[in-house]
Every structure is written in C-alpha cells, then in structure tokens.
Figure (cartoon, rainbow, N blue to C red):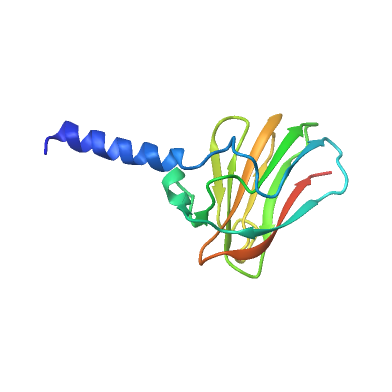
Length: 149
C-alpha cells in the first residue's frame, strides 16, 4: 500500500466518523430558545445519556458513547454572562456540544466526580446542539443549562 493510499484511507475513516454526528437532526429531548436572564436558571432536562457512537472520533478531550442526533438543542441569545452546560448523574457521563462557532466542545469530569461541565465564558449567540454521553452503556441523567448571574 502506498503512503497516499494509507493517508486517503485514514482521512476517509476520520471523516466518516465525524460525519456520524448530526447537529442538524431533530433533538431527541427537544429544543428551546433562551435569552440572557432566562428563568428558571438552571434549565433542567431529564434524559437517557449514551448511544452507539464513539465520541472520541470528534477530537481531543471527547470520550464516551453518544447518540447520532443531539439530545437537546438550545438557541441562545447572549447577554454577556457565562453560559454553563452540565450533566448530573450517578453514572459516569460526558458532554459533547456543537457550538454556534461550528466547533466541537467536549468534557468528561469538569464538574467534579463523574459529572461533565462545559463553560462558555463569552458565549456566542446561536444554536448549541448538546449530546450527553455515557462511559458504560445508557444512563439516566439530568442536563443543566445555566447562566452566571
């Protein structure tokens, strides 16, 4: 096998994995629009975390198993305060967020223990597609979206 063939095979595999995530698919647990100062703060959503797709294919810091479609979608209108997306569970969960900047943001244990948390200090306005994944099979979890006040 030539170096070019190996490169093209690896590149095609990486592209196929990243394209498995579909930020534009309908969110399994719904969507909402939040404006600066939203109530209740935090917004909570009960869901089942996990899926069949390896989040590690999305980049550094991404881990666990997530679904193809996002679990929840937030259309956020910023007011300058930090926006925090977190998950709470008795199980080991992870977060994957496709932000309005087009980038993937991932966390495993940022909130401490087995709970993930991603803080957008200067959040962009727009759509946040959110996946709550799990390390060991599907898990009950609570998604929390909050704003620093």
